[in-house]
Length: 114
Image 1: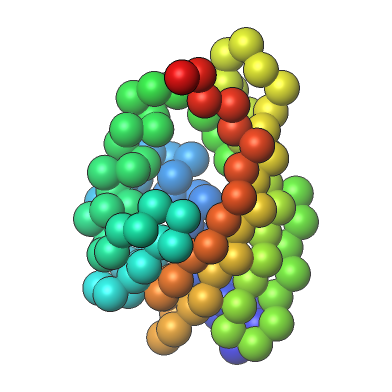
Image 2: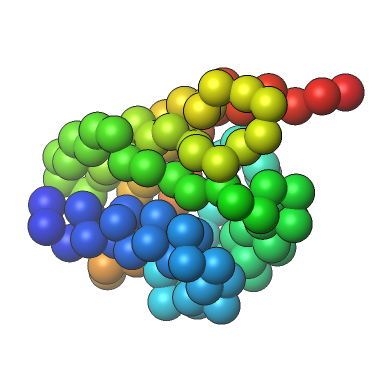
């Protein structure tokens, strides 16, 4: 299970970094739920990634640390390529089911101007 969970998380970051927005159907479960955004389904991730890449076209997520236990991964990342700020840190926790991400919790130090 540990390898499957790690692979699911790494697939998600690789797809994000490669702008493979349509890969979300293969990475997330149909009933995926994002706790920070309050959204459901892979299409919500596609829209979120598209908006993020429109705002920050050079953004790349770098995995700094990953801890996997059971069906859950906790991942600390930094986001490179954001103009005018130090790379923000993100902490995300994923629950994986059947090799795909089913649920996500997260915190970010990304600075958002009002």
